[in-house]
Image (cartoon, rainbow, N blue to C red; front, side, top):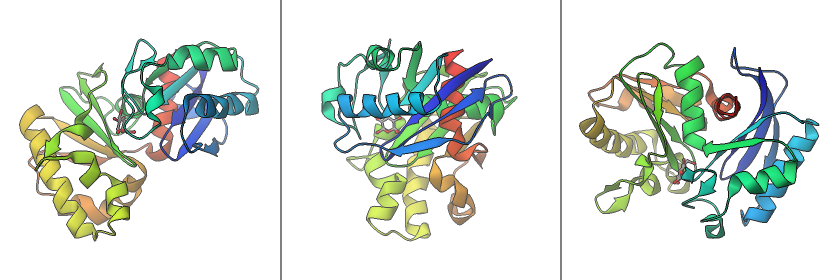
Length: 242
Ligand code: BGC
């Protein structure tokens, strides 16, 4: 089975055809910058360009950085607010002429990690967090996804967690690994209290540098870096399309 997976983020939109049985990319991925402002029309055009680049006619899966309910965007933390209430699936289908499945971007990345990566074969509660522009979350029980959890938006000390503990906060505020790890630790400690996960998987681009911050965490739960790294969103979106 093959599907085109597209990972839509705050800074880049990436796609590649994927073998959804093995979780392998079939070609190099193709990346375009996320248009700014990230309006529905501009982003839909970028998705269209990716579908055209691969001359793709089959099923498409797209991970989108918002709450997605039956194809419709219900939030817009790091994209243009005019997305709220728009039917993302219908817009992408009209532009691309292929059947499209849309799901939350972290749910897509989490699906890939639980099927093919760090969480493969793990039962119980598994929490996948993507640390990037925002913080995305994907919650699984025995491999089943509880969609649209938004744990990046819990408040800590009166502040939305992702504004303090996302990788973008580390970069924006030029935080040392130690300082950022302290924030992350406080955030994760709260999630561990709420969810008692068997395992936490840390994804997003910064997971490549996991040895800089994972050893500094003190939380009482097994924590591991994502294995599929920046391909997880593409692979999980493609898997969701089949
Ligand atoms: C959004 C989530 C998204 C996450 C990662 C958050 O700001 O609310 O829906 O999964 O960023 O992109």
